[in-house]
Length: 332
Image (tube, rainbow, N blue to C red; front, top):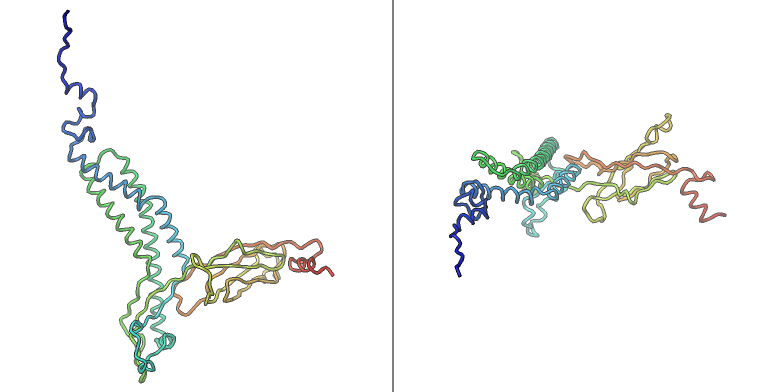
């Protein structure tokens, strides 16, 4: 019996036929870099990984949305000038306490003209910081689109590599700047704000900006009846305790039809988180705004929350909302 002999086969040819990507990139790493120089492939792969990592971390939609939320809140915050005593970290001896002045006294001793000048400086600083945050946020949005386009490319030229590395570094720094700008800084003055007063020891002081969260209406609890509105508000992101400050509520009738209705407006000040506004017209729309009452240390606080409520119509018996409720409880 004759044995059938098969001609010898070239293993490399068979391998190349089974893995065409490998045959296109001689010396490549397991076919990972088709048609590309190994060094160039490593550079491409490393840069591509950096881009995708940036897109999945700092430039992911959730993180950018959080940056937008922080920016919106900061635009609605109130900013105040705060007087800080440098000696408060070291409590004076009991015998020397009589020589020290309280913070409220120090505030009254500051030269009014210099204090107003520092308030203007604080106002400008807040405006600059908010503008910078707006600009950084726009860079995040544009950077996300740019990085997505780069991630979809299959090759980077030599000049593109340098440009992409620069853009990645720029975006990372932008996020660092965004976080650092969220914290207001100190205000530096070249001259003393107060001078020595007799035997009392006047401590060294410095000024800084403090931030209070915005005041916002609680729309779930606020309501309008026939002739009044019950308004509730809160400070964003804070547990509600005793406010320790005053709030200013303004109201006005929308689209008045005569002079008398045009007088349906007013301003009320209170030191709680709720108020009832009376003597409103039935079945009409009123605009309400709430804000912190202006203080002498306020340097920036342009925003106030606004809400529109429509009062209820009179009941069939001609009673207002409160009268109708009382009539039902006490019909006699």
